[in-house]
Image 1 (cartoon, rainbow, N blue to C red):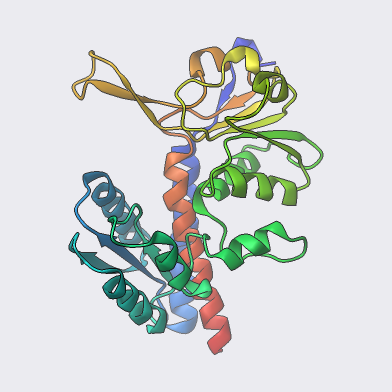
Image 2 (tube, helix red, strand yellow):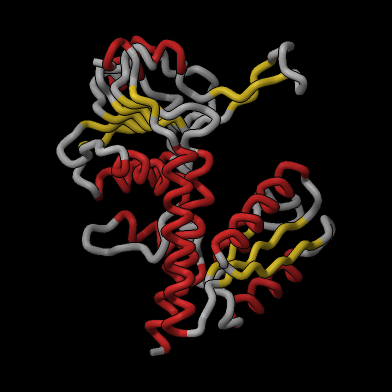
Length: 299
């Protein structure tokens, strides 16, 4: 049960800051040993405001930890062939250790073709079919794991929450979060169920979970009475709900009803300030790991 009727808040911002500090140290050490600096290329097509915001945050985070940024800002009418040409140049560039294409892409470009074209060694987003395939198989480690699910698991580990032998429920089955999160937890010896939009009586399944990862994209879907007392709850949801008291007219809430859940859970992430900061921290970590692999291969 929650201590004093209140769950322990998992501070994603603080944990992400400590990971960034570790990455900065790793970058300095790699440069001292090999003379190489990790490089991350970020490709953005078009001028979507939200995508531009994410890209700015990623570039700023790279600068803070000493990772070199390779910027490719392409106009909205760029053809698929032109984007593929940029990817090929980045695949061939030894100073680039990670390639990130900001999604969504404009309608004339097939996202799958673009993601498949990124070299598996430089797939720091972890979405290459071979990386996902390796994640599915026992004894086959992917080169990179998708950043948001990796961040979810890192929050559990760094909060001292036992995963092996526990029952975990992932709410949502997206390729970006739900499925890889479930695979990661299975790899860490949890017993995992996935609840989705076609599940009968999802509440009864979630109630059995020691660990809940909510990634369905539906505001306040998971209520307090869905939770087993003392459960660890990781809320990936970022949903805008109307709030006339805010200047923007809305506020961000998670997939979990935080006010209800914090009275039942043992540990819980807030929204914002929980999983969000971890995604970029994991991207930086994946880029450093890729640069280390590259340095070892050349040694």
